[in-house]
Image (cartoon, rainbow, N blue to C red; front, side, top):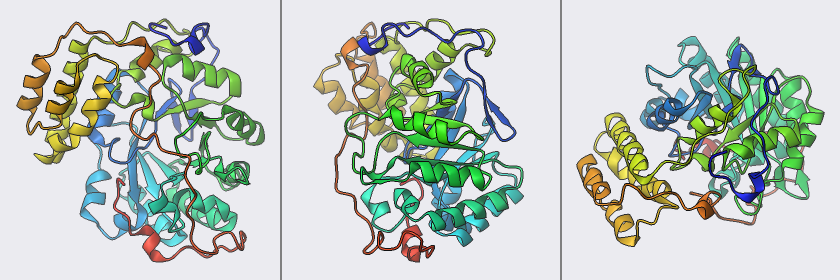
Length: 396
């Protein structure tokens, strides 16, 4: 598959008819690939960039239910989609049923979404210490109340859940979470094969994805964790039986990964896949960087170029550009600055094969799980956490 790491050397592309589209309610997703919601990353410009490389389902960064209902300006901005975005997919974060119901009702009644994903997997301490994100599946009745509220307000708009294996090895919650989702009418579930304790360390355990697929048979099960190359996606689906894959950090600085994924799965399920080409040269990477930066500035104004700086290290990882260029890219204040720095680099540089599986962005863990005091005392208690658990800025 173009450039491969050893683990994928023998992985064949999808055979004709081997895989089927992911049916998420009325949405038929082919190739069976989803862009994971990532705070501060999967905004409209990044989604548009990825979509230009390949088809799939592209989910927004997290927005808070309370922020949406209260008319928070940043939340409102993040919840809007570009004219070319279809289907419109949003991830919603909420910690109690009332605000989630009102937020979903608002999104649906105003015809602003085609798909809603509920965040029950965020592992960050600032979220779990308030009783949100990955802390909620520890209280299945609270989880069920929130899911029922969302599904009840969504009507024909499909609602899905994304979650982790559990908080740690002593508290695996993924099987019960999956069953609750299925029983209450969710359209699909996605599992990241790590615990909160692991954060982003080690390797995702795909065996848990296989176990969830065996337990939840009425709706699609998607797998998430360590999709760095096209071969990983095919290998995950074959080894776990999952219905599709969710791509997170693997696409940071590499939006063309979605094009490679579309190639290995094929234009139609009955066609079968093909071998993707080699990774882009640095010149081609530079073109994508400028396009991304222009989209961000058009969307966010002058602040967009500052936001783009964090992407530069991800784009250049694996290319021998040297520290001076990386330093200069952290000082850019305009698209012209960006273009000028990139023009001074060797456009013919190719990707170092050893960098294919080097993580981008989050790399922390293991880390102690932080929960509200007494959170584990009574798992059957459906009482939501205090309102401050939702006083978070959308997008992280």
